[in-house]
Image 1 (tube, helix red, strand yellow):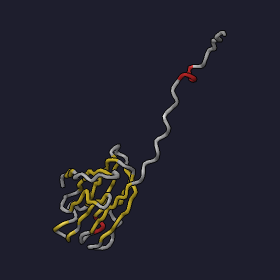
Image 2 (cartoon, helix red, strand yellow; image 1 turned 135 degrees about the vertical axis):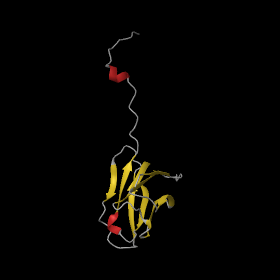
Image 3 (cartoon, one colour; image 1 turned 60 degrees about the vertical axis):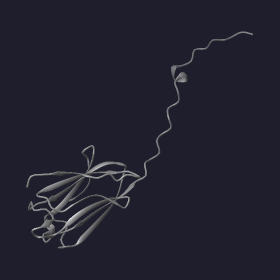
Image 4 (tube, one colour; image 1 turned 180 degrees about the horizontal axis):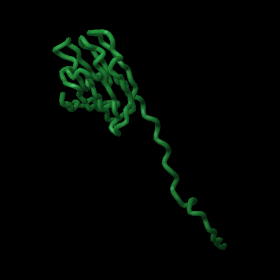
Length: 141
């Protein structure tokens, strides 16, 4: 018997690439805002940890006083920051009504607030089985 040497291209010796990752399952996230007596002052921004704005609602969108608005979102797993804004710089509570906001992930409240000045940011995780406490960042009024 004899052996025939053949030259193989480098790609023939490289390991096969790993299979693609399955797309992640969207996470149900709810942002609920109860307006104060001046709903047109309230807006919000939702950022990914990369700094990209995922969703937003500009001031002037809410029009009903003391009304609860619910925004149902489906987000990819990750870290997010909700920045609540008030153009009059008096937050949602308590000088002109008793407004508030909550963020819910997987039916667990992960962020909430009401008393702030011009803006308040809450960082939270959206993942299949997590709901750690949020961190608050207050901005000068």
